[in-house]
Length: 134
Image (cartoon, rainbow, N blue to C red; front, side, top):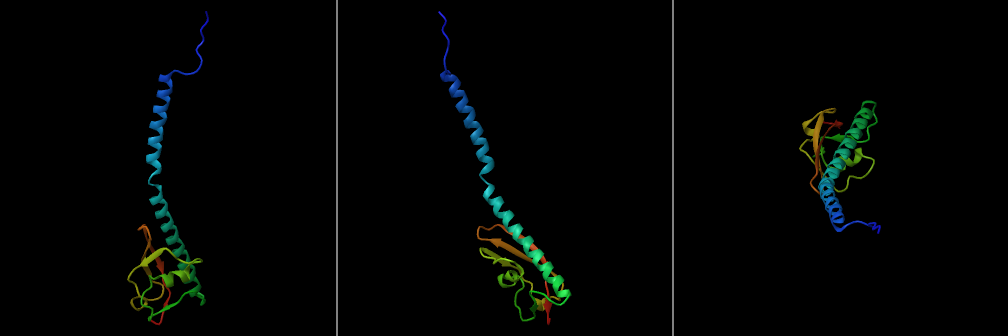
C-alpha cells in the first residue's frame, strides 16, 4: 500500500503561526511611535516655510516692497499675526512664542521664535525681521 500524506501536520501549522506572531510583534514595535515623529517633521517643515517667507520678505524690503513691515509699536514679533503675513496659508493649530520686539531690534536682525503644535511637538525657527521706526 502506498500511503501518501496530504496537507500539513498540526505541529507544522503551530510553528508557522508562532513565527508569524513573532514577526508581527517585532514589526508592530517599529510602527507604533511614528505619529510623534510625523508631528515633529510637520512642525519642522512649517518652521522652514516661515524661514523661507521671512527671507523673501527681507529681500523684498531691500528693494522697497516688503509684504510684512513691523514698527516699534508692534509688541511681539513672534506672534501668529506676524507669522501669518509671511506664509501662504494660515497658521492654525500652532502656537508661536518668543520675546523679540521691534523696539528691541533693528531691521535685518535675526530673531528666534518657537513653533509648537497642539500635541506639543516643538521646533525653533530663526528668521530675519523687517522693522521700521525703531
